[in-house]
Amino acid sequence: MPPALRIGTRGSPLALVQTAEVRGALETRWARQGLAFTVAKIATTGDQVTDRPLAEIGGKGLFTKEIDRALLAGEVDCAVHSMKDMESVLAPGIVIAGVLPRSDARDCLVGATGFSLAELPKAARLGTSAVRRRAQALAVRPDLSIVPMRGNVGTRLAKLERGEADAIILAKAGLDRLGQSHVIGHVFEPAEMLPDACQGVIAITAREGDRHVAELIGAISDEPTLITCRAERALSAGLDGSCRSPIGAYAVLDRGRLIIDGAVFSPEGDQSVRARIEGAPEEASALGARLAHMLRAEAPPKILKVLDGE
Image (cartoon, rainbow, N blue to C red; front, side, top):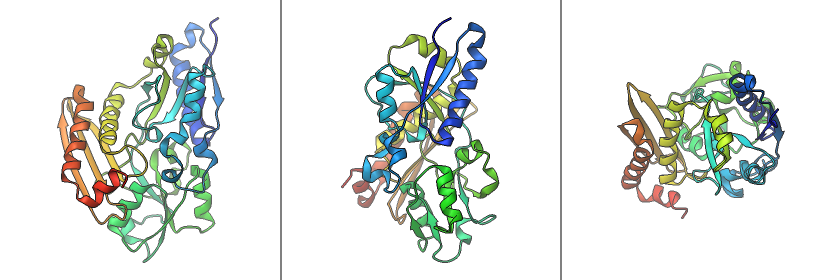
């Protein structure tokens, strides 16, 4: 019997649920061939340091660098990530081997059941450390007091329960996967709050050139999701792609056409640029890059300074 495929993952409850989904898909597809799959939990800096915004301590790579290191060292054979937490440019030697079908990409408001942002009390405390969510919330409600809030889903829900904020914004996909959908008060449509690039997508990475693992993962990969992710990641990379800039990206396939919405905001939400592009699915990366160029061309100096890290 061939050795078990070792799957690396973060140790958070959501990461483990997502990894179980990947493992289940692999077992369904390959169990008859006698393949087995094991899970290895890997501690990441992003999970260990939760008292400061990601932008201050190194960005999205803090959720992936230790896992990438284990993958390149041969300690695991593939790794599972929330794709929205992956940097736009992967570490050398790492490739995206596949993705599962996308879950709900939308953000949601928790803590004010039945209310929208507009209906929150005056000067309400809104918990989020995501600059994208902060900017879009302040664009609607500049009076809101933004409370920095990091940690896994359970940690943030506990902070809300303790009264550290009046409401928080979370990804709907994470709450759905953890069986916490009942706490959702309002779901933001993309027109209200544009999601993060690849939000709701589970990605599986592997070592470049590992054809055996690529075959195993490729057999469970969802091509429509991969196409939309290529577009969104190209858009994000063309603008900035880190967690420092308030960037939204969302692509859908509709009757054989790829439609991409993109936006970039000032940190306080008082300025924004939004645009859409569409074209052939096979041009996903080029379309995303073109949309990024369009947004940059229209962006006012205040937003360009943020994108360029000034």
